[in-house]
Image 1 (cartoon, rainbow, N blue to C red):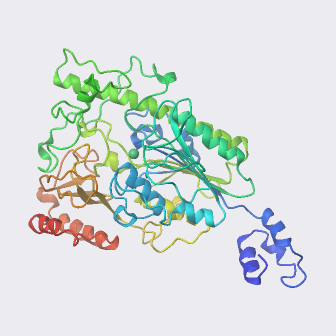
Image 2 (image 1 turned 120 degrees about the vertical axis):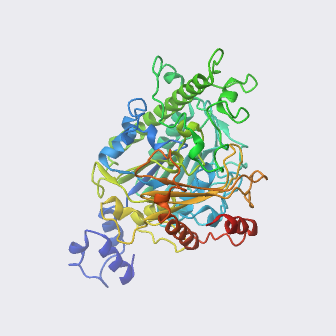
Image 3 (image 1 turned 90 degrees about the vertical axis):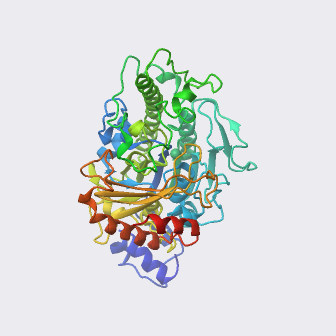
Length: 537
Ligand code: CA
């Protein structure tokens, strides 16, 4: 702060510049002068990033879905009323660990090295917390980490081992010997969503108030197996949750690639289906078994849906209450003006649409991420943004707000001006998606595709490739195309419809362009190139 360059930079940065310019710039300024002024200058914003796990946009009332009257989330909704709600925010690889790595690095999975749940995040890599920390932010990570290796770039962390527990969770605190993945931790009595918030508030209370903070507060909820807090046990008694239009979808319109794959709510696929797990006495379903005796197949699907949704939404309500606690803390401590608050989820979630549970799919419900952001200094209350934004945009956006240069290896773009209603002229018109963990756990085949505002084209290549944890069996190859304007629920695959034959080659060319742009060409996989050769056109 004592060289002329630093002073010039400083004066440019501060609204005190006009006053300070009247003072001599060299020679007679006593030591400490600029430091004193700096304290009067506008502070860099705090960044509070609250992320839950598997919270579909549809289960946030602000998004106005058929669940809006049931998934009441007044506190999360406050962020939309007082800030901006993204309508087209998408995950680049819709599954927990990979999305978390993409958020931290601003890079696609194949670049940051976390393609699947099994991949360890390399803690020596650059990440957004490290960049903010080295620029003078205090950084903290509380809650679900799920990247296997010890968090890096955080002054403080206290994280769940692996998936963590809903009741009386263990937490692994910085300063104690790190144990990988599911190992380690000490018991914190209580319900996990409350405990994570308690720990986050504790850190905020003890932070250095002279420095801006960057906090990642990551909830475990509403991840399966949806163990709700005792206080919400009777929340939906006597209520029937509305069913999605596609709960009993006739899948004959689909490609052969998806007709028989994926975890379903119905019992047509008994090994994989949710009902089997909810009714298997050996599994001891934590929120109670599903009674199916005497029910028809359709009734079982309906009953499984009701149970799934009620458990899931009870978990969401606890998240919302705890977001409220965080917002109250900011209000009570005069931090709301200068703190950017984000609420998002690591991806979306299938809530019975297409008779599906889980995420991973490029179907809209798992592809879409909820994203609500409040920053009164820049973002108008009640604003909405329709631009295509991605999880890899989060890191560069935070860096932009903090005045930290975005490294060239970051693939996402800052959405700061988009949030102010000023979309850059060259903003992306399409997004690239890729799911790697072929047929693992939920039997969802490997696929990639492109989403524009109107179309979604998906290529199910059906290969395990070298993805960690992928099932070493192929599945049928197929293409699916959906018209997102005419068919937002994706109930009609129009890949073979004559009306769309002109647009398909254009979408395929754009898909290849995106693969080139993000350095995810398939040349390193001869088996995939062979599949492409026989199925591309
Ligand atoms: Ca997740």
